[in-house]
Image (cartoon, one colour):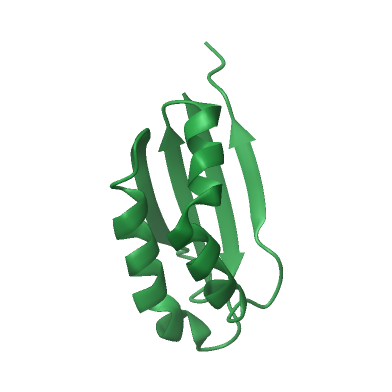
Length: 95
C-alpha cells in the first residue's frame, strides 16, 4: 500500500470556487483501479487550507492515477486557485 498526503493552500476565497473541481476529481479518482481511498479535509486552523489523503494498493496504481485524463485535466484548474505549490508526501507502511 502507498499513502499520499497533498496539502494545498488556496488564495483568499478561491477554495469555494475550486470545490466543484475537487468534487469531480475525488469522485473520479475513487472509481480508479487500485484506489482504496481518496478524500479531502479542511484545516481547522485555516479556511484556505486542505489536505487530500490518498491510499493506493501500489505505487503502480498511484503512477497510473497521475497519468489519468481527469487528473491531468483537473489538477491545473485547481492549481490556478492556489497561493503556492502543494506539499506532497508519499508514505509506505512501516510495520
